[in-house]
Length: 412
Image 1 (cartoon, one colour):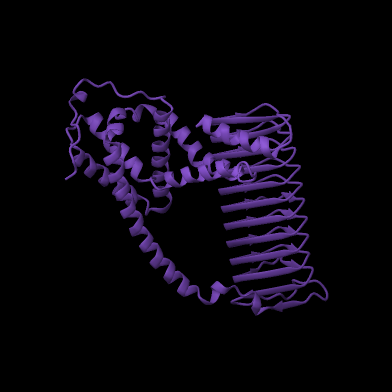
Image 2 (cartoon, helix red, strand yellow):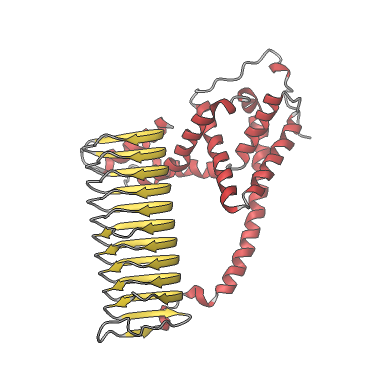
């Protein structure tokens, strides 16, 4: 993985940046303790940044905590991102759970499942934000463009507000103009609008005492989003599509299990029994593949010479995603046969692999924990295969008769 990430990172750095010093960090756990005079690029399972970064910080990690002040820009992607550092430039974050606790002099752009901007945080530029659940307590000196499922705006906006959401709660001052579309729109006791307001909501809120002198508040039906009228049709169609997609995923996954065993029986047999002793390295490398590969592939698209590399990277990532349940199931079946010294033919191991696959698919229905289990299983599987490809794992010691294991008969 280090070799792959280094190639992609070097391509991006050489084509898009000036001749500043750059430092690339790759590992399962990366701790940045010392100050850095240049740019830092990180792909890690976990990232903890403590030392000051005078240049840019670009990172992809399953979980990252940034406590070091950033001299220029930050571009971060991770499962959980805790930004506890002041930045003199712009900050862009993509994550499942994002928390911003320190001020940013430039723009802040965030896309996340759950986003929280703490009290006391000052955004010197614009705030561009999209998330499932957003809680904002800070202060924005520029404009705010925000979209999400549930928005709680309890901070201050000096500029204009453009908002689209399922639910919107405002409990702070908006000094610029406001353009709002929300299924549900509620105002708190501290809500105040200093300039003109145009809005659409199913139930109109009471603006009494919440506007400045001479401020016009207009209900504008043209702001009503197209999905509002067809909401029930949308959800009905979405549920049908989801059911159909689930069936397709199961059958395609079962087919993938059959193909992996049909064409990879000798490969999996040769390396069976070693996954358990390589869990740590497999998890670290798997995380770098799952998180670092799409990030670096995307960065490669920023340059003309990097587009082919980016396309290859996304192609590899797409193939990986098609095997997220099938590959762990197949590896698990071969591990089981080896460690338990079972006398399974290829047909028997196929049935076991199919059983493991169906269990993983069933567990995935339990939203949070099921997703974690499937993610960890896929991460371990990809990391394990990469260790084998890099020859970090040698074939199991076998006798002339392959340790008395069955050669693997045909499935039928």
